[in-house]
Length: 249
Image (cartoon, rainbow, N blue to C red; front, top):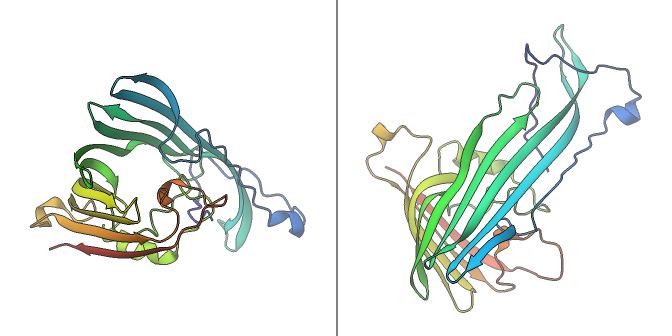
């Protein structure tokens, strides 16, 4: 599931272990995942609720031990182990005066060999209801283009990402974007849509004549719970047909 292993060395952090462990143990890769929030991606501990205002806070942390084969300095390969805090997420979400909001702050790769961890904003958005089937969302969040890349381990632990997702992502067509969209649902959630305009975070701004247009339509024939926010364990079943579109000039 985890295919983003960091390899290499750092002058401040040399290789830690190169023992001749028996072959049956050498191939062992233990991934320890500690999730300190409920199954839903943006749910957390409710710390405030009054009238039309709510606030929930959450923390997710993933300690990890990796034991992998890497290139040796003198040629060939050798075994390398690495203890790290692979991911740390501080989250907040809530509602104020009818509008909902979400905020996620991240630090990846703490004490990981070859990594330079830095704090960054992963999500920061507000959503305003306009009618019963339409809302306006603005800020930084996942683009509505590909459900494949949106299956991150914070949302669907039982689903792996396909390698093909890296192709459009390299051109800025998926993953987090900054912009605004109109989204909504009908028929008790069996029909969902989103259409918006965004900045492409890969293409330099001076080369973007118009914003990137992206949208998606979903037809859900099974459970209408948010598929992005469930680990796919339990009795619920999803049967969904989706159509994606994205364009940039």
